[in-house]
Image (cartoon, rainbow, N blue to C red):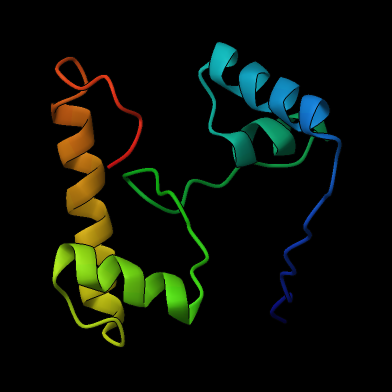
Length: 101
């Protein structure tokens, strides 16, 4: 029998959410792992590399497509452009003062 997994969005005051994110960082855990440990639930690592997720509207995809020159309807190109920008930001972190990409 397969179990159905459901994702739950938990809305908190910004200072409470920030505190939990910082606790996860301080313990060296990814936020989902930190939350599962907090509730004493098993932690299953599905990926060799941690992932970041973003939810983008059609307008946001179009805006990014114009900036990074990709087809906003091609999910693979969207992912590749976002990944490249994040890796580039990491590689240039010491030389950039601006938080924007």
